[in-house]
Length: 266
Image (tube, rainbow, N blue to C red):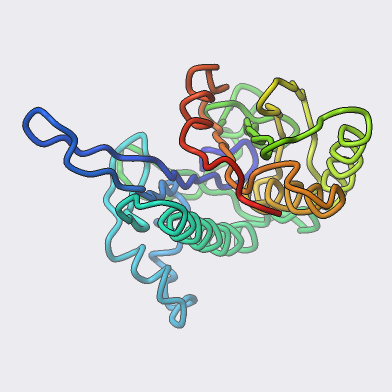
């Protein structure tokens, strides 16, 4: 399932520059979903459970198996033409995230992986046969390790999030207190842990541990929205960078910041 104790999948929102001959022809914002093989195969075998869920039905019809990347499906794309196209791409990514969560919840419920569950059968993806199979107890010993690219700790996925300061921010004692207080409340609400927070001139970089069932967008956007409301000004821009692959480099962060408008408003 790729997760330590549960299903793990991911949604990627990226900028795709298309080059024709010796020049850039267009720039697109592309959304892709990577579904762990166990979840995809289990939902496919039980697709009637989602008979009214058009998004999941389309995902099952169009995803392609790509080995270590699991099942990959395009979840939307739009030519980049400013803030409107960025919002559209973000909406498509959020819809894909929610679809994967619905798929994960079926697996977690059926396989006894919910926190309050009484346990149940365990299953494993057999890469040799290409099928989901029951796993006997011998497969699940202390040497069995399943993880995500950036790591898993205490059954939570590690993400790196970049919060971009708004135009004319004043990150001093008062605004720092707003951010800290908001972060603590969001951590309690989403059962999230913070490993590290680094503040720089233009942004804050936070290392976050999120439960499998929590979408990164829900946590991050809640922090941004509440901070901006409390500060009565755009303390943070609405666009953000989040990844669970590896800690973004300063150059990657600067490239991200360079694509942002001067301010997105409160």
